[in-house]
Image 1 (spheres, rainbow, N blue to C red):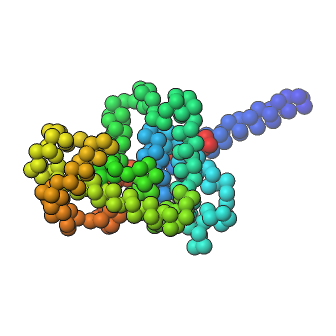
Image 2 (image 1 turned 30 degrees about the vertical axis):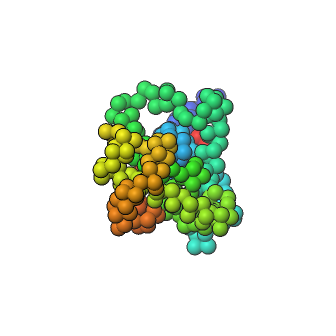
Length: 275
Protein backbone atom coordinates (compact mmCIF):
# COMPACT_ATOMS: atom_id res chain seq x y z
CA UNK A 1 0.00 0.00 0.00
CA UNK A 2 2.75 2.41 0.95
CA UNK A 3 4.60 1.46 -2.24
CA UNK A 4 1.59 2.39 -4.37
CA UNK A 5 1.19 5.61 -2.43
CA UNK A 6 4.86 6.45 -2.88
CA UNK A 7 4.64 5.67 -6.61
CA UNK A 8 1.52 7.85 -6.88
CA UNK A 9 3.29 10.71 -5.13
CA UNK A 10 6.31 10.44 -7.44
CA UNK A 11 4.05 10.31 -10.50
CA UNK A 12 2.12 13.36 -9.37
CA UNK A 13 5.36 15.22 -8.73
CA UNK A 14 6.69 14.31 -12.19
CA UNK A 15 3.46 15.46 -13.80
CA UNK A 16 3.69 18.70 -11.86
CA UNK A 17 7.24 19.24 -13.18
CA UNK A 18 6.12 18.52 -16.73
CA UNK A 19 3.26 20.97 -16.39
CA UNK A 20 5.57 23.72 -15.13
CA UNK A 21 8.25 23.40 -17.81
CA UNK A 22 6.37 25.02 -20.72
CA UNK A 23 5.66 28.13 -18.67
CA UNK A 24 9.35 28.85 -18.09
CA UNK A 25 10.23 28.50 -21.79
CA UNK A 26 7.35 30.52 -23.17
CA UNK A 27 8.02 33.47 -20.88
CA UNK A 28 11.72 33.72 -21.74
CA UNK A 29 12.34 37.04 -23.57
CA UNK A 30 13.72 36.92 -27.09
CA UNK A 31 15.47 40.27 -26.83
CA UNK A 32 18.45 41.46 -24.79
CA UNK A 33 17.65 43.27 -21.53
CA UNK A 34 15.98 46.63 -22.08
CA UNK A 35 18.87 48.62 -20.58
CA UNK A 36 21.02 47.73 -23.60
CA UNK A 37 18.44 48.79 -26.19
CA UNK A 38 19.90 52.28 -26.89
CA UNK A 39 23.31 50.76 -27.68
CA UNK A 40 22.50 47.63 -29.71
CA UNK A 41 22.39 49.10 -33.23
CA UNK A 42 25.60 51.06 -32.75
CA UNK A 43 27.49 48.14 -31.23
CA UNK A 44 26.27 45.77 -33.95
CA UNK A 45 27.26 48.22 -36.70
CA UNK A 46 30.69 48.67 -35.15
CA UNK A 47 31.23 44.90 -34.96
CA UNK A 48 29.85 44.37 -38.46
CA UNK A 49 32.23 46.94 -39.94
CA UNK A 50 35.14 45.18 -38.22
CA UNK A 51 34.15 41.56 -38.93
CA UNK A 52 32.19 42.00 -42.22
CA UNK A 53 29.94 39.07 -41.31
CA UNK A 54 26.54 39.34 -39.68
CA UNK A 55 26.54 36.20 -37.57
CA UNK A 56 30.01 36.91 -36.20
CA UNK A 57 28.97 40.49 -35.39
CA UNK A 58 25.88 39.28 -33.51
CA UNK A 59 28.04 36.87 -31.49
CA UNK A 60 30.49 39.68 -30.71
CA UNK A 61 27.67 41.89 -29.41
CA UNK A 62 26.45 38.97 -27.33
CA UNK A 63 29.95 38.72 -25.86
CA UNK A 64 29.86 42.44 -25.00
CA UNK A 65 26.56 42.11 -23.18
CA UNK A 66 27.75 38.99 -21.38
CA UNK A 67 30.79 40.86 -20.07
CA UNK A 68 28.56 43.74 -18.99
CA UNK A 69 26.20 41.33 -17.23
CA UNK A 70 29.08 39.80 -15.28
CA UNK A 71 30.21 43.19 -13.97
CA UNK A 72 27.28 44.66 -12.03
CA UNK A 73 27.46 47.98 -10.25
CA UNK A 74 29.35 51.11 -11.11
CA UNK A 75 32.91 49.83 -10.90
CA UNK A 76 35.55 50.14 -13.61
CA UNK A 77 33.66 52.61 -15.76
CA UNK A 78 30.74 50.37 -16.68
CA UNK A 79 28.12 52.79 -15.39
CA UNK A 80 28.21 56.58 -15.24
CA UNK A 81 27.44 58.58 -12.13
CA UNK A 82 23.92 59.10 -13.45
CA UNK A 83 23.40 55.34 -13.60
CA UNK A 84 23.61 55.08 -17.41
CA UNK A 85 25.80 52.58 -19.17
CA UNK A 86 29.10 54.02 -20.36
CA UNK A 87 29.18 54.04 -24.18
CA UNK A 88 33.00 54.21 -24.41
CA UNK A 89 33.29 51.20 -22.10
CA UNK A 90 30.83 49.20 -24.20
CA UNK A 91 32.63 50.11 -27.43
CA UNK A 92 35.98 49.26 -25.86
CA UNK A 93 34.66 45.81 -24.96
CA UNK A 94 33.24 45.47 -28.50
CA UNK A 95 36.66 46.34 -29.91
CA UNK A 96 38.25 43.67 -27.72
CA UNK A 97 35.65 41.10 -28.81
CA UNK A 98 36.24 41.88 -32.50
CA UNK A 99 40.03 41.76 -32.20
CA UNK A 100 39.74 38.39 -30.48
CA UNK A 101 37.47 37.01 -33.20
CA UNK A 102 39.74 38.35 -35.96
CA UNK A 103 42.69 36.62 -34.29
CA UNK A 104 40.69 33.37 -34.13
CA UNK A 105 39.78 33.75 -37.82
CA UNK A 106 43.43 34.31 -38.75
CA UNK A 107 44.34 31.18 -36.83
CA UNK A 108 41.79 29.12 -38.79
CA UNK A 109 42.08 30.60 -42.28
CA UNK A 110 45.23 32.72 -42.31
CA UNK A 111 43.24 35.87 -43.20
CA UNK A 112 41.08 38.50 -41.49
CA UNK A 113 38.32 38.38 -44.10
CA UNK A 114 35.38 35.97 -43.78
CA UNK A 115 35.52 32.90 -46.00
CA UNK A 116 33.39 32.31 -49.08
CA UNK A 117 31.14 30.07 -47.02
CA UNK A 118 30.10 32.87 -44.66
CA UNK A 119 26.33 33.13 -44.84
CA UNK A 120 26.10 30.10 -47.16
CA UNK A 121 22.72 28.40 -47.23
CA UNK A 122 20.77 31.53 -46.37
CA UNK A 123 17.61 32.31 -48.35
CA UNK A 124 18.41 34.75 -51.12
CA UNK A 125 16.28 37.62 -49.71
CA UNK A 126 18.19 37.46 -46.41
CA UNK A 127 21.55 37.13 -48.18
CA UNK A 128 20.69 40.11 -50.40
CA UNK A 129 19.68 42.19 -47.39
CA UNK A 130 22.98 41.40 -45.69
CA UNK A 131 24.90 42.44 -48.81
CA UNK A 132 22.99 45.73 -48.88
CA UNK A 133 23.73 46.38 -45.22
CA UNK A 134 27.45 45.73 -45.71
CA UNK A 135 27.45 48.02 -48.75
CA UNK A 136 25.74 50.72 -46.68
CA UNK A 137 28.78 50.79 -44.38
CA UNK A 138 31.05 51.85 -47.23
CA UNK A 139 32.53 55.33 -46.88
CA UNK A 140 34.26 56.35 -50.15
CA UNK A 141 35.55 59.61 -48.71
CA UNK A 142 37.58 57.66 -46.12
CA UNK A 143 39.45 55.67 -48.78
CA UNK A 144 42.70 57.51 -48.08
CA UNK A 145 42.77 56.98 -44.32
CA UNK A 146 44.88 54.40 -42.53
CA UNK A 147 43.20 51.62 -40.56
CA UNK A 148 43.90 53.52 -37.34
CA UNK A 149 42.50 56.77 -38.74
CA UNK A 150 39.44 55.02 -40.15
CA UNK A 151 38.61 53.38 -36.83
CA UNK A 152 38.85 56.70 -34.99
CA UNK A 153 36.72 58.43 -37.63
CA UNK A 154 34.07 55.71 -37.52
CA UNK A 155 33.75 56.13 -33.77
CA UNK A 156 33.62 59.92 -34.02
CA UNK A 157 31.38 60.35 -37.07
CA UNK A 158 29.18 57.27 -37.41
CA UNK A 159 28.87 56.56 -33.69
CA UNK A 160 29.10 60.18 -32.52
CA UNK A 161 31.63 59.69 -29.76
CA UNK A 162 33.57 62.73 -28.60
CA UNK A 163 37.38 62.86 -28.84
CA UNK A 164 37.81 61.92 -25.18
CA UNK A 165 35.42 58.97 -25.65
CA UNK A 166 37.26 57.84 -28.79
CA UNK A 167 40.51 58.00 -26.81
CA UNK A 168 38.96 55.81 -24.11
CA UNK A 169 37.82 53.21 -26.66
CA UNK A 170 41.19 53.08 -28.42
CA UNK A 171 43.21 53.24 -25.21
CA UNK A 172 45.09 56.33 -26.39
CA UNK A 173 46.06 59.68 -24.92
CA UNK A 174 43.48 62.41 -25.61
CA UNK A 175 45.93 64.72 -27.40
CA UNK A 176 47.15 61.84 -29.55
CA UNK A 177 43.56 60.98 -30.42
CA UNK A 178 42.73 64.59 -31.35
CA UNK A 179 45.75 64.67 -33.66
CA UNK A 180 44.68 61.35 -35.18
CA UNK A 181 41.16 62.63 -35.84
CA UNK A 182 42.48 65.88 -37.29
CA UNK A 183 44.82 64.15 -39.72
CA UNK A 184 42.07 61.71 -40.70
CA UNK A 185 39.64 64.58 -41.35
CA UNK A 186 42.19 66.21 -43.64
CA UNK A 187 42.52 63.00 -45.67
CA UNK A 188 38.74 62.73 -45.94
CA UNK A 189 38.55 66.32 -47.15
CA UNK A 190 41.18 65.70 -49.81
CA UNK A 191 39.32 62.62 -51.04
CA UNK A 192 36.03 64.48 -51.01
CA UNK A 193 37.55 67.16 -53.22
CA UNK A 194 38.89 64.54 -55.65
CA UNK A 195 35.47 62.84 -55.81
CA UNK A 196 33.84 66.20 -56.56
CA UNK A 197 36.19 66.65 -59.51
CA UNK A 198 35.33 63.15 -60.74
CA UNK A 199 31.62 63.98 -60.57
CA UNK A 200 32.05 67.14 -62.64
CA UNK A 201 34.07 65.17 -65.20
CA UNK A 202 35.69 68.03 -67.17
CA UNK A 203 39.32 66.93 -66.94
CA UNK A 204 40.47 64.24 -69.40
CA UNK A 205 43.13 63.01 -66.97
CA UNK A 206 40.53 62.49 -64.24
CA UNK A 207 38.20 60.76 -66.73
CA UNK A 208 41.03 58.41 -67.70
CA UNK A 209 41.88 57.64 -64.08
CA UNK A 210 38.31 57.14 -62.88
CA UNK A 211 36.98 55.38 -65.99
CA UNK A 212 33.37 55.40 -67.08
CA UNK A 213 31.86 53.77 -63.99
CA UNK A 214 31.42 55.20 -60.54
CA UNK A 215 33.03 52.63 -58.25
CA UNK A 216 34.40 52.66 -54.75
CA UNK A 217 37.88 54.12 -54.70
CA UNK A 218 40.76 51.78 -54.22
CA UNK A 219 43.69 53.11 -52.22
CA UNK A 220 45.87 53.28 -55.36
CA UNK A 221 43.23 55.09 -57.43
CA UNK A 222 42.58 57.51 -54.61
CA UNK A 223 46.29 58.38 -54.40
CA UNK A 224 46.43 59.06 -58.15
CA UNK A 225 43.31 61.22 -58.12
CA UNK A 226 44.36 63.25 -55.08
CA UNK A 227 47.85 63.75 -56.50
CA UNK A 228 46.39 64.98 -59.80
CA UNK A 229 43.97 67.38 -58.11
CA UNK A 230 46.85 68.79 -56.06
CA UNK A 231 49.01 69.27 -59.16
CA UNK A 232 46.42 70.39 -61.71
CA UNK A 233 45.53 74.06 -61.32
CA UNK A 234 42.17 73.74 -63.09
CA UNK A 235 41.10 70.69 -61.08
CA UNK A 236 42.24 72.32 -57.84
CA UNK A 237 40.09 75.39 -58.53
CA UNK A 238 37.17 73.13 -59.47
CA UNK A 239 37.55 71.17 -56.23
CA UNK A 240 37.66 74.36 -54.15
CA UNK A 241 34.46 75.63 -55.76
CA UNK A 242 32.69 72.28 -55.42
CA UNK A 243 33.52 71.80 -51.73
CA UNK A 244 33.36 75.41 -50.53
CA UNK A 245 29.88 75.01 -49.02
CA UNK A 246 30.19 71.35 -48.03
CA UNK A 247 30.30 70.10 -44.44
CA UNK A 248 33.58 69.31 -42.75
CA UNK A 249 33.78 65.61 -41.80
CA UNK A 250 32.25 65.04 -38.40
CA UNK A 251 29.75 67.91 -38.54
CA UNK A 252 26.00 67.46 -38.13
CA UNK A 253 25.44 66.74 -41.82
CA UNK A 254 27.96 63.89 -42.00
CA UNK A 255 26.07 61.12 -40.18
CA UNK A 256 23.28 61.28 -42.77
CA UNK A 257 25.69 59.51 -45.14
CA UNK A 258 26.88 57.07 -42.49
CA UNK A 259 23.94 54.85 -41.57
CA UNK A 260 23.71 52.45 -38.66
CA UNK A 261 22.55 48.88 -39.27
CA UNK A 262 19.73 47.52 -37.12
CA UNK A 263 20.93 44.78 -34.79
CA UNK A 264 19.14 41.40 -35.00
CA UNK A 265 17.73 41.32 -31.47
CA UNK A 266 16.92 37.60 -31.39
CA UNK A 267 20.40 36.62 -32.64
CA UNK A 268 22.10 38.92 -30.13
CA UNK A 269 19.93 37.53 -27.35
CA UNK A 270 20.82 33.97 -28.32
CA UNK A 271 24.50 34.91 -28.41
CA UNK A 272 24.19 36.46 -24.95
CA UNK A 273 22.69 33.25 -23.58
CA UNK A 274 25.37 31.19 -25.30
CA UNK A 275 28.17 33.37 -23.97
